[in-house]
Image (cartoon, rainbow, N blue to C red; front, side, top):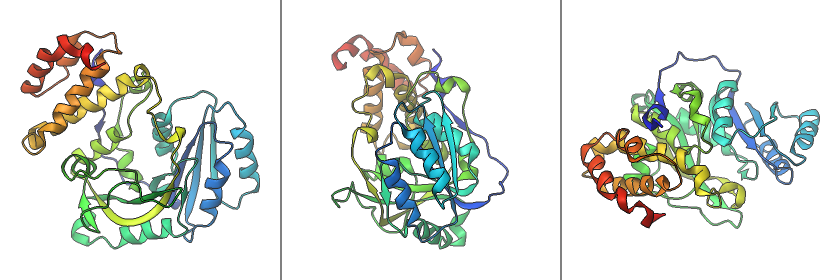
Length: 316
């Protein structure tokens, strides 16, 4: 296994031509009970310049029938794709990026809701970015509440706050569910090999950190725009570790290789945690130590991993 070869990179793309301001993308899997709630939320949007791109990820319930009914009756501009086989959420995400006809790409889960002004606020916040920042700002992200009205996670240090996903999490320690859009042009620059998807689950954060590595920034705002329904669909915590092991390992290796040089002295615990998780997930993979060490760039992390390898079963 060559983990390094599976880490995505970035190739800048020529600007595209788009038919809509937003592509609102929803990946659905067995969502017959909730997808109409999501549809109703989009019907109530004050800004209507968007398409709703829905990819059915091999559902085994009546999701396909519900979606076909919505396509036939809804006033929304719906682009519906029915994948016969389950491809996992990240595979559907990248499939949707290729299909998107909107300048801004916004992921919206199949069991969530958003405020009626959500798309309008996102658009206004992007348009208000100062000219001297706009070239490098490729996203706007806001806050969420849960179905009981409780805020999910932390506020940003200020609003607006310009940063990137890595610094928000590793340096500022901002935690909790957030919601925002990214420029479709920039998402299309994320380059990955087909084998990327052969091992199941791929963390979404890997994509955001690819973009952060290019120096792109996000405008973070302390405005609640989404209602996040906490449930099984919104969590991988119940997934067997063996099914998420390779994707998680790639994510942690990328964090170490990309950010160690500039951030080791600012947040050493972050990198030690990443190393710990690589060791932990190695218990659920058949690969030898060398498969991991040859993919770790920083010498000190490579040495630490080698020293800890004999004890990895203790963190299973």
